[in-house]
Image 1 (cartoon, one colour):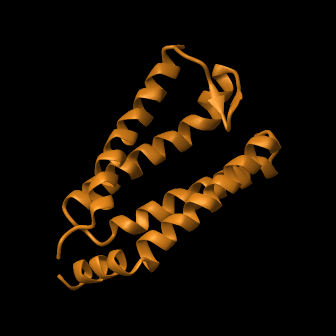
Image 2 (cartoon, rainbow, N blue to C red; image 1 turned 90 degrees about the horizontal axis):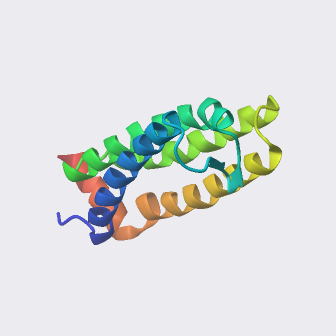
Length: 139
């Protein structure tokens, strides 16, 4: 079955996003650039302690998504949803522990819900994409 066009684009996007995640961690370690979480400036130390673990895990997941899409594996779509679930859980946990500013927490939760919902629709409910992944599962 032919791979949907948007998945081919998302393959490249995920690969570049993964590289960007690790580049952002490297730049932060070298104290280069502004440090922003949820659209708000934070200190380098805050960014390294709060954002780096999440950015690193998402970078690995993005690399796996790009790989999975490229070799047409059905598990790749589950990782996309996992990223947004991870963001929501991470922000909620850090917000509950008062480690994360509540403005940033709510922004992360809302973004995770919006983009996660759009991803669920695209990967699981859009007829041609759902059929594509069903076909991959049969192989």
